[in-house]
Length: 481
Image 1 (cartoon, rainbow, N blue to C red):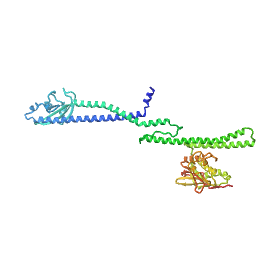
Image 2: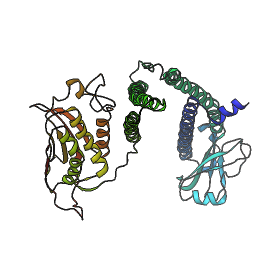
Image 3: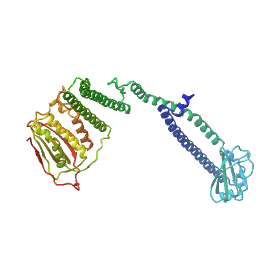
Image 4: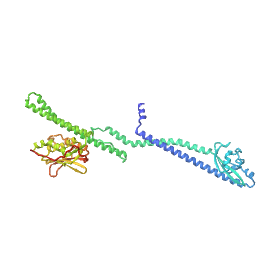
């Protein structure tokens, strides 16, 4: 009972399509039936009226043929002129002659006789002894130097019977045609939705644990085929995304495992009680470094998660680019000097961009860190305006990127060395790309023709407001001391 009620309250798409089709066919049949009935009725009326006019001409000819007076003409049986009824009336309404078998009284009322004496009239009335209604045509004529009124009529019984038969046929055949059309509509909808049902059944079996399975594609080149192809393309993208997420989780676990293992070892050694004070300090310093590494990894993962969910906070504002790069240069100056390298910043003083200062510095800091970590020679930071964008570039004179790495540089946990022997988590460039996209730009990497690597981000050039408290900046060159 509950299932029946649910089916009635929430019918299937197949039933909905059938009901809609049946409703449309029902309206169409009703309108068509009314049109046919009206046209048929009008045709019958036209035929009856033409018959009345034809009989009027016959009666007029009969009256005109009499040459011995109206008495002789009135004695003729007018029924010989054809089926129906006829009368010849005087202008005062006296019956001069009529069809035998009907009462000898005028077919028309006094007012209708007066009107008919002026112009022909067509009306419907009843006559004693004649079943049903009678259609009457009254026409004034001039015969034998007298004004007469010719009245002819015909029974509407045959018309009523014919229309009743037509109604019966329509009332019987209409529902039958509607039922047959509905069954045809149901069959067509069932045939059309068969491929949808096949896709639904296959989709029910799909699972992330079994990548590669796809929905069946109907052979017909119609909307269902395009739907199946589109859904399969979506499944392809989902498989790629799921594979990337699985790889991401595996890489994150791998990156967390090493610092956690080192941290656990250092803590166990510190708790053993056999270590000296210097050894304890070294163990705690190592544990602190590993803790920082884990914290940085967690922060980077959070940034990427926010970017994936569209929640990476971007607070744009007018920013003088050379001042931002100077802050980054000062942050890495000591590290560059310790490695015997130079860090050069060359940006026009007047270059203003509209960006999030913290996020932009985070992205550029990652690029500088990568150049100092993996590159060699002088690290150069430059910025230019080109084609409506601002390009901020970080280049170095090292060995450059491996060719195979260029295509996967911005994937998470990707590193130039497959063995993961270098420091870092492989998330820096991914964060750079996420920040660039959040600003409406892009991130790129390439090898320089003369040697070395170059990475840059492009940001929309919407900087048309100079900060109120901005002061003229200057280029800076930080060399090793």
